Length: 349
Image 1 (spheres, rainbow, N blue to C red):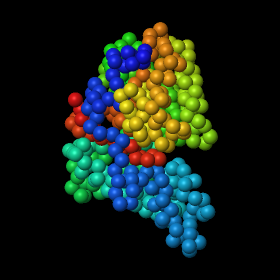
Image 2: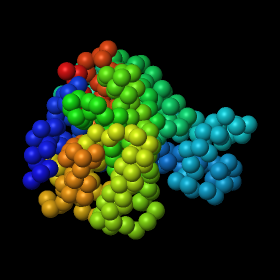
Image 3: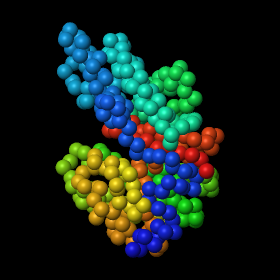
């Protein structure tokens, strides 16, 4: 009940209208005859394309990667190969980048045909795949392919580190008045492999639009490597928040009584998750599970003020980190390439 009263003043979970933007759509699940369209533009899709180029070399006994599976080759290793003296290995990686760029451009074209994505002027590409040289090359190549086909949309890599963008975007969930006279907020980014909690400094004196916001400190837990339940994950998350509150206090960082949460799926107004959280451990889509409410009950006050929590879709929040830099266009979107393909389209208000 206390959480409902607080949110009546600060906004609604999964809101379609925020201070800076209207959210035209998010978490769309497009399909074709082969299944979900997003599966053609994911981390797994790139690995499958790389594997396809390795197969003829394996048959000839010339695979430059040896017996190592494509899934076990990290982005860092692939980045090094791109600039190495091993020309054949570099050619394989370049071929995979080209194949992925073609698929990605096709997926983007399908989004642009949707009514909710019509007249999109710019698309930000985020997610873990962007955090690599091969990801940047794939984005740039897809942009060229789209322009060659006559598209009027530009693809741009997200400017913040993808791990930090999901935290920084939480600042734009909060109403401006709750941030006044405070230095930072608590932010949570929940993913299918990791959860990250952090303190985001707004730096409003330097930039009232929060364009100078940055992550002061964060904590990461990779839950995918462990057999964890939903409740144990939430317990660990709460411990991370309490630790960050104590560290902020000892460093004289005044936290606003606000927690922003980025979470996969379609977020209902009451803080429950309608669908799309299947990659998280346990049942996050139960009507009896409400993460914002759990946070408020566990951390009822921050700095002697009642805690308020707002949760939204993770692609939406990652996109919001770009909001201060999108004022030169009217309609823009974000696609996040990771385990799946996150998506959101915005119209500036």
